[in-house]
Length: 249
Image (cartoon, rainbow, N blue to C red):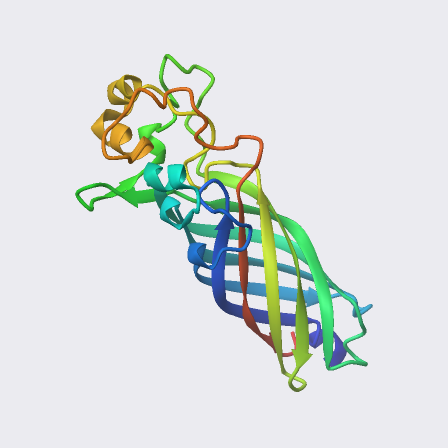
């Protein structure tokens, strides 16, 4: 019954996570990257070409206006970090028969859910979580259509990789996977600036300080574009995986 036993696999990934959004000037930006790990349980269907997998991933991402070439954004001086915890179910499609080739490419796609919670450090170097502050007027009477964003969201993971069979038990994999998300608030930035008096009344002095981190708070920015709500934020994970074929069930 060895053929059935070989269909079950476990894999562990160590690598990096990154982000693309309002605080990152490019899609792939090494300055947004942090560590990432992933663990999957996999099942290869008898046809050898489709592998189902479910697992959890952890990554850390960040963004900083200081890395932007736009001087106005540098002056704005916003930055954030967040941990991401993700659970996903995906299908891998082998582009060659693993019984015939030791090395082969594959594509994958699926669905996932992830948790994030952006934070920064204020002028006193105190860690502050941004979502409760409502830095774009969320939760205020003046902006009834701006709600505090949810910290748990859906994502669509997809990507590609290369598998190399070391022996009958182990394989090595390199993978890069992108996550389309249904949020524009990974970085706490999406729409327009609001009047500092509104922020002060609803989120306190921290909200005023962290919504616009120029030397002094300004009413002049109220109503101006802070982010692009039409473009959702993305994150991605890449790394090396060790795949282990599990014993007979």
